[in-house]
Length: 334
Length: 78
Image (cartoon, rainbow over all chains, first blue to last red; front, side, top):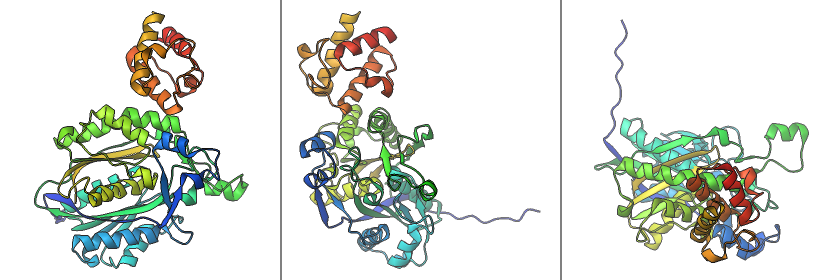
């Protein structure tokens, strides 16, 4: 006879309880970027909206930045690190195949009771993490989940590539997700299109580099127009589906926080969503650049800190990037 | 037909980039005369695809130098 297996039960709802970020100290202007590429401050601002970004120090690692953001999020949540049951780190720039960044972060912050793993979903990684954490809390596999988006993209770009050098930057953002009395994280609309894997990818694998060398170490390359077309054409639709799934009208939003890919993409998404002018739109990219998995929490923190959006407000999140992959959900702001 | 496409395209270029409709004429270069950058060009192409039910692949976009090139391509493929 098959043995009876007991299962776990969680709670009905989960919410984002708190947020913490790490912004590297060093500010890099467009003028400094233009010492490496043939471009101008005006061109960079027109194409992306970026005026400056932050680069991590040489000895400031993905794990350092993630741990710094995590400390702040845990403190703001009013829980102990030992209460955390899961540490999820969304990143594509941790420079080790194994072990994951998450296990080291968990040890660093004292989350000794937590399981931990990394999420490889590029610029959508944070929103993937929010979805997983929501499911974990609601199913009972963890009471508190730490979700971190972190990147040190400057280790993996070619500073002489006109298409990417001005765009990518470094940083980290963390949230604690835990039980809620009321619904506070809507259904996630997500997907993947590996047919477009070449739109954003690595110039070669590390194995190819080891065996054959090459002009430069493997770096992130991007087909800008292809990504722009996909983002503008498909991502507004995905965001609309997330609104519909949550039963929220665009006009009821208190914030729209898309991945800070490029202000031009954000502009086009705002138009396609017919977002009313009274809804504040995250523009953290202007001074932070595109920080991939870190961009949504960094942008969220800025809106809350500056008062552009308020704790308890309703926000539409969407992450999208290399894969291609995307994830979108409506959340209550911490 | 071509005249209708030209006027439709002028409206699209106006909506995407704010170029006055009357400035969008056949001989104008998108980049040099109308100041349409590569990202705005993608938006123009996407709007044209929706309007006339054509597929304009990225590989073709770079061949569409002038407004007239775009009109000809759309007329031939819609």
